[in-house]
Image 1 (cartoon, helix red, strand yellow):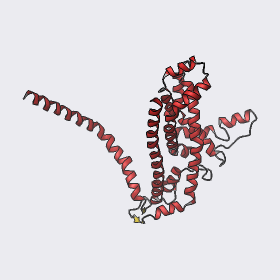
Image 2 (image 1 turned 30 degrees about the horizontal axis):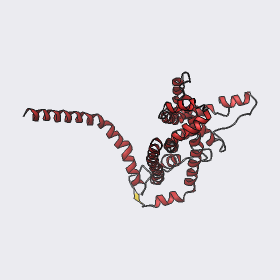
Image 3 (image 1 turned 90 degrees about the vertical axis):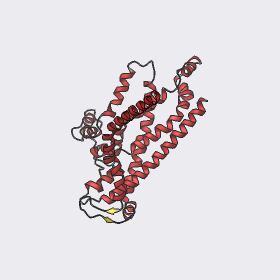
Image 4 (image 1 turned 60 degrees about the vertical axis):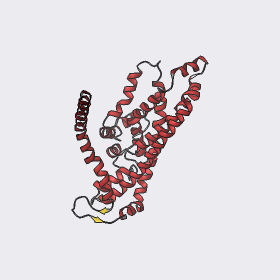
Length: 311
């Protein structure tokens, strides 16, 4: 009887503890359901109807919205811009952050903790604010960059954000600077998994920095390269806030990524087409899901590769 009473007491305490856990999780669960899960599910229904988002009438049109999106040249142009943006941003983030992470991972570097913080600061800055500030920075008339170009006699001024030839490159550079620290943290975490005694043995054998990187660091980082690459590529699909605040998709749609294309039809058009925009969003979601599937495969492959290298 005493043992049974103790068991009942423990079960009662566990139930109370679980109750408190669910109570604390309730606000997050409700908000996540209302503002994340419900819009995702609703977008699938909206993609099958013709609706402007304001009237009560929703006319079911089946897959007509999908056919219209696929037949729209502007949609494929936005896909092209998204791919070009990814090709510009992802390699720069991966390679430059790797080189910087190797430097900041050196125990001989003084104030390396301070440098890590400084390079990570842009990540925690609000992206919309960064976009607004960068509009002033790249202003062709009074911006500091063009002022410097005129001061040194390099150029009379470049309309970085107003020219279709430079706008995407400019936003790409700002995007790399803004999110550079995230990829750097990934590489720092990967570098710290390499045993220090391996580097010590290489130093004793007389290996220089370049030989150490080529023969030790790079092979042991191979399993992480796939994961970091996939995470970085997937991250480039979320550039709406920076692109919208800096260029709004212009000039002449040269920076209109898929997210801005969806936003334009859903909210910025003279007659909003929520069903059409939802169909484009669903297609975009499928693309992101494919990248997510590649990420899962990359995690599995990297773990297996890591086991092969360490066994």
